Image 1 (cartoon, rainbow, N blue to C red):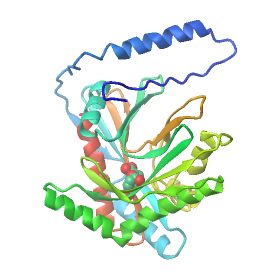
Image 2: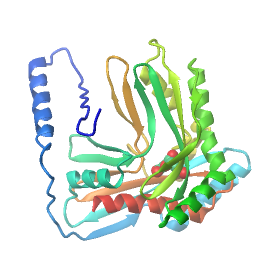
Image 3: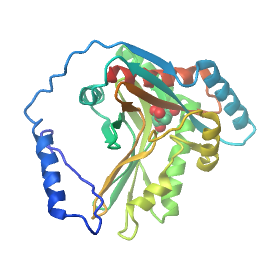
Image 4: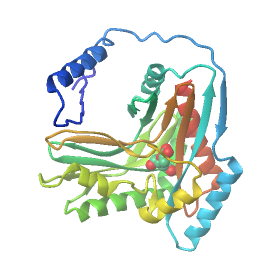
Length: 321
Ligand SMILES: C=C(O[C@@H]1C=C(C(=O)O)C=C[C@H]1O)C(=O)O
C-alpha cells in the first residue's frame, strides 16, 4: 500500500432487528466524510488558551511508591511492576481533537495514532509505539518493547544514549522479562514463536529496546484468544502479571481506564491489528487526563523513572495544546 492509500476497517455490532441498508448507508456517509479531507489542508483555528496542569500523584509520593516496589523486588515478591502517573490539564478552551491528532501524526510518524470515542463526547487518543498483535494471512507479529532512554540533542549524544541503553543490564533485564513472557504465552497456545534480533525503536522524544516476535497461526486459534493470553504483558503490568496487576491497583490512586489496554480491529478472516493504548490521553471538552508509566525492576533509579514519565507526558501534552 503506498502513502496515498489507507485501509478503512469498520466494526459494527449486528443485532437481529438491525436494518442493514440503513447501517450500510450510514457507513458510506462516514466514508464520504473521511474522504472529504483528502484534498484539504486542515487549517486549524489559532486559539490562545491558558492551561492548568496537575500531576495526579505528586513526585514525592510517586518516588516513595517506587522505593516500596524496589523493596518488594528485593524480597523476591515480584520482578517488575509498571507504575503509571496521570497529568490532569484544564484549558480555557475546548481541546481541538483533529488538531491534536494531526500534531501527533506529524511528531510521531512511526507510531500508531488512534482516537476512540465513547459517543458521549469523551475521546481517548494517543500515539502508541507498541503493537500487541497484528495478524495478516495467518502470520502474527507482536512487539516486546521495554527499556528506555531519552533521544539526544545531537547525533553523538543520541548514540551515547543508545549505547548505554543497549549495554545496560537493568534495561536488558526489564526488556527480557517481556520477551520471555510473550514467547512463553505463545508457546502455551501451541505456537512456535520466532524471536527476531533485538533493535532500537527510536521515537521523536524517546528510544526503546525492541524485539519483534512472529508466529504462524493455525486457523483454529481465534485472534481474541491470543490477545487474552498476551494482555497485559510485563511491558505495561509487570512480572508475574497477575501479582503485578493487584499491586498496581494498590499503588496507583487512579483508574487506568483505557490506558495500556488493547485497541484495534479484527475481521472475519482472522486478520487483526491491536496496539497497546499507551502515550495516551482522555479528552473531554476542555479537560484532558494524560497517562504514562515506567517499568520498575531491580536497579531502577526513582529519579530516572520519574523523569521518564515526565518526558512521556510533556511530549504528549505538547501535541495536545
Ligand atoms: C508503560 C509505558 O511504556 C512502557 C514502558 C517502557 C519502559 O519503562 O521502558 C517502555 C515502553 C513501554 O513498554 C508508557 O509509556 O506508559
